[in-house]
Amino acid sequence: MTQLTDIARQMVASGKGILAADESPASAGKRLAAVGMDNTPENRRAYRDLFLNADGIGQYLSGVILHDETLRQDALDGTPFLTLLADNGILPGIKVDEGLTPFPGFDGEELTRGLDTLPERCADYAAMGARFTKWRNVIHIGADLPTPELVHTNAITLARYARIVQDAGMVPMLEPEVLLTGDHSLSRAEEVTRDVLATVFYQCTRYRVDLSAVILKTSMVVPGDASGEVMDHDAVALSTLRVLRDTVPPEVPGVVFLSGGQSAEDACRNLAAINRAAQAEGGAPWPLTFSFARALQGPALAVWRGDDEKVAEGRETFLTTLRRNTAALAGKDCA
Ligand code: 13P
Image (cartoon, rainbow, N blue to C red):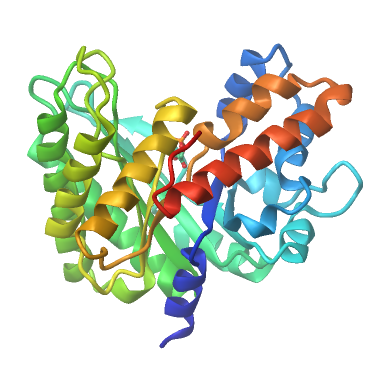
């Protein structure tokens, strides 16, 4: 087993998941504004500290994805966030894409920036101790979306990213996010997600990516948020598993899910249903775990709201959310 495959396997270690804490300063600002806080570097430090300094997170988390700012930042007590993670046995990851940009000629579609400067940035991050990376593409579903050109271009970008990251000695997490916004049905989400994932793995093979050293971060297959369809967790689980079985090569060490704007409750229940269905089918070829941002952070943020007096309660809420989601990995419901 290569060293990278070994890291990838640690990222999906049994019974654990990955916290996405890699919001850009602008996105972190939206989370802070939602709880009445200003978007300052100090408030962002306190926001990260709430989660990364919670006691015992290493029991539930194999990895945390950071943004550049946090990778270089100290916690409130002066300990570098990277040291906190190391002390908890948690692998540090880094978001390396530089966000979205309109796809010229293709109204309503977006590409992801950051490939040109990626080799140099990856060398720095690897030297600082990052062990894995994340790159997010987005795919909008609409009447005429996504276009084949968007799916194709995004897949090549993701494949090229992955190869650059592997050459720098880190494990690439591939995140082609099929957005849940829209009025599309569950079956349309299944069709699009199948096309997207099949294209990603096809291009990864063409662009010489070692598939035994990547992690797929995917959307669950869910109906659009304006579809009027009721979320049926068992139907989500079956659609999601069908797509993964049809598209993800067995040598891929693990599959993790984003929450994508689902409620914390729905994300956890869907995760449990997916793992239950996989067990009922005799097991999946890969561990299936969580890599949520909003569905892990949301409940704790709503308790904390920037109040020093509420830090302990916010952390307790975070640990409860982690406990529920790790129980979901064994198929247990998220009560
Ligand atoms: P959400 O779980 O909030 O979708 O975030 C996951 C993520 O990493 C998005 O890039």
